[in-house]
Length: 467
RNA sequence: UCCCCUGUAGCUCAGUCGGUAGAGCGGGUGGCUGUUAACCACUAGGUCGUUGGUUCGAGUCCAACCGGGGGAGCCA
Image (cartoon, rainbow, N blue to C red; front, side, top):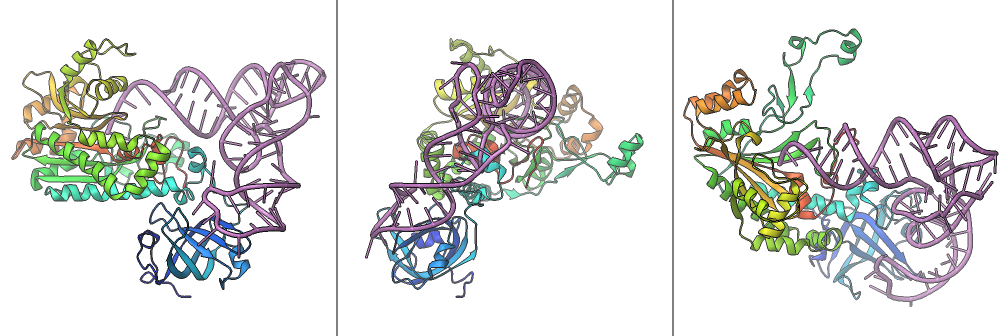
């Protein structure tokens, strides 16, 4: 029996009826086997879709009984036979095997994945095998759909994909704990208790893993007009929650000749495109999430697509919260950040849909955001969605040299470190805007998964970097 | 980092008032002519997270530590 990339049929295609009535070859991993005296059913999954292909070995099958015996849950195998219409109720086609062999066995009493529901906590401990489960296969395919939809969306709008650096020598935003990158012999230095001499380090100065590609994206936006980054991002914060990872993927578009309104417009269209892509291109997986992970998910997403994105200012949001008569744990007041309970009230009760909040007090936002004429708010925008809260955060950037210098000073940052960032305002400055979207938070939202550790293949969190 | 919960069979859990451990699923064996969370019968399987303490006696009570989960803060 000879298999090759060209001649084997992927199960997603076989189930769609490709090769019906013909002899085809498939391969994959056994999900389950059921047998009675004269007929054996093997469910084969190759990860190309949620569903498995049912393979039939009946009394006429030339496949030896001891070979069938080896087709246990988890085993890899290949099979050849006629793709036929299935008399069974749960599938339209099945493979009547004429040849089959196990490639790699999986001992049933030792294989960690049983044919039953496992807790996500347990599966996290076997992340090398959890990809073979329904949920994690679906997550992997959804990530792929959303990743490709992201590239297509920005390409459609004339953006260029930008590879921003992973290693940075400056604490970019002064926000977020950084992972330090060094080649200094830390063990020796710790024993010697000497002062660190960074001139001997790889970059001859302290270096870190990036917490954002935004400042670099601004550079290229001020040359190519529209760029976006989609890369790994690192935060060394000691937070143990269902929404934080030490290593995650972030999408950051940046647009020159674009004010906050244009920014909001692109953000809204992008979010809509992502949801449409998930529903249309990953419909089988999305139905699984709706049925098994978060009942009502599809309705919520359809509702969001049908909703207008309500635009209010931070001031209006605070006033609405104060008028609500609701008992909040944190009393809403000017100058305080919106708590998740506040976001939930706005999106789930007051407006029953997505809400875009703009013009926050400058004190609670980053130094690079453009100051409004009132002198106290900045041109920031947060896109809030029901259930999740903030999914996108962005702003128009300060393009006035003097104002930006002042904001750097006020933030307690070093102007010298930002000389190149300031140069963008010295030479050919232009109104520009951008936003950021955490990819795993998006996947968590669209899948309904509770824990962010279960929407990335290999989660890195505090005290945890297994696999 | 703070608060709360939790750790018992391969997995998910029960275990009363402190008296030497139980179920379902999974595994194994046998049965079953089309099953699909297959079904039926039988069967094996335990250092109760670790260390120390209280007690005649600890899965159970106490302390510390370790692991896991949830919430808060911060954020994406």
